[in-house]
Length: 261
Image (cartoon, rainbow, N blue to C red; front, side):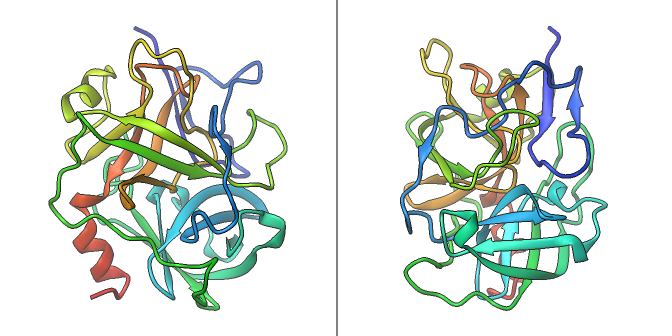
């Protein structure tokens, strides 16, 4: 079976797609989602590179955000900005980036293993009703893919090549796949350190995450259990979930490298 895949960051570079390019306005955003409410996700940030929205992330503490490693791969730190404090980019607080840190076992290849990264911000975050740290799932805790539903959040484009939306989008009630369902969905790709979420085979809805949403969270029961990594094009197709780095394999690393412990 011939499939197309895309890394879910969007920058001034051409998005990396496997098998073919994105054509004819192929969907590349939070697909089928809705606008989030002010303060609904106070831990969410947008990542800009050269003034363009390219990824999302979550606040860990006053100094660090969590995102996908491929969002920073081979990119120069001085061109990043982090936007926090609002579901509207135009009303957000701007932070510079002073450190980039990728997981040591991250590999920039087709299935993006260990796609976990940190960015240090300046000025630090000031916590309040609109800015709060995310709660991470504990190390080694397995998310029950047979019963769980997830929420994903981001600022991805309306379609490939479109202007960037100002308002944060969310998708709710994503089916979290079991490990085996995740692996079976693709001819390559998900590893034991991946978690998948999307619409199950037979669903009449096409909802999910796509280009520009990388680095954002998969939230289950109020905890971040995944980091948006990659997906099949077109996005949101039932039976082909988005793939996330599974946070419970990395919680200790995240806390150690962000000064949380």
